[in-house]
Structures are given as structure tokens and as C-alpha cells.
Image 1 (cartoon, rainbow, N blue to C red):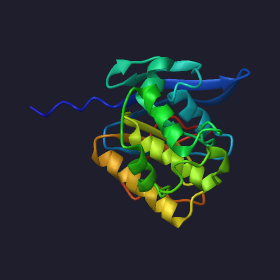
Image 2: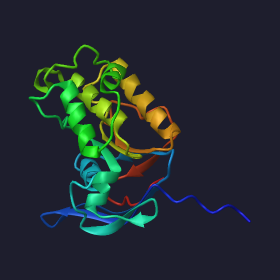
Image 3: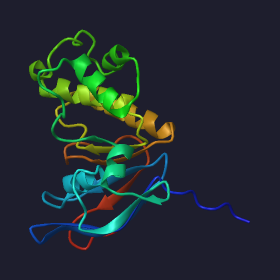
Length: 214
């Protein structure tokens, strides 16, 4: 007998979102297994960022269901089960880099070597620097350090390469590769100027007529 198909880490059925009565995306049907990356493609206004925010529990879907590890989940469970890196850094401007990481870890109830996490993303020496004094690229690296420490298996990355130099782009690639190798999964968007990470990637098109991953 063939082995049963693995339970997807994330599965959406009929997922749709509307703003002021106007459809933004959907209905969408897709799944994401452990060890997989799914690249969301679409033009400006196709709803890429909105989709990630729905899956992060920041917005409520108009229709459809989402399952994680085979169990239907609500916004609260999506927020707890995923790690989201968006366009905004999501840091407290008056806290230092180290304090921001400590705050994020306390929210998740986990511990980790915060200084090592900063060093791993190229922020050694910036432990006591306020987030407001960091450049856009350095704030993105601080977000990557937070991501690296997160216990979530599902990463939602909205244009993770933006504001990064070549070393930063290579850092994102390495983090994604390691996360997938460890049994995690990544759903991401990228601007047209950036390539997808160097791992096997399926695509989820958004826009008119789109509705399933390939």
C-alpha cells in the first residue's frame, strides 16, 4: 500500500479577502508542506501583502478556511503559529536591538542567545543601538534575527530582500535554506528586481483568473 500523503503544514481552501466590498484576492486553494517554499506572484495591487497579513492573523479573511497541521485555525492561532516579516520592521523605535529581541522572545515565551542572533545577521556591535538609529537595511537584519529566533514553523516573508545589500540577500537565502532543511516552510513575495531563494520553489499566482498553486 502506498504511504499516505503528509499532512500539510498550511492549507487554504476558498480563501478570499475583500476591502470595502471590492475583491482583493481569491478564492484561493493551496497547500504548503514542511520543507517547502511557496512564492506568491502578482502585479501591484494583486493582494500579495494582504494575503500574507491574512495568514499572519493580522486581517480577517472574507471567506474560506485555513488549516495548520491538519486542524482548522482562526486568526489567533495563525498569529501564534507563524512568523511574519513585513515591509515595516515591527520594532519599538526607542528600544535597542538587543531589547527588541528580548521583547519579542518574551512574547513567544522562548529563550535564545540574543547576541549570537545579532552577530549571525551582521549586527555585532549594534546591540545597544536604538532601532530608530539603525538604517533600513539594519532594521531588516534585526527583523531577520527575530525570525531566526522564532519557534514558528511557518515563515511569512513579504519582500524579504528589500533594503538589503548583496551580503544581506545571501543571508536571507541561507536562513530560508536552513529553515526548510529543519522542517519549516516559507511563503514569500519578492519584488521583480529580486530572484527567488535558491531552493525548489512552487508558485502561487494572484490576479485575475488565479486560484491555485503550481
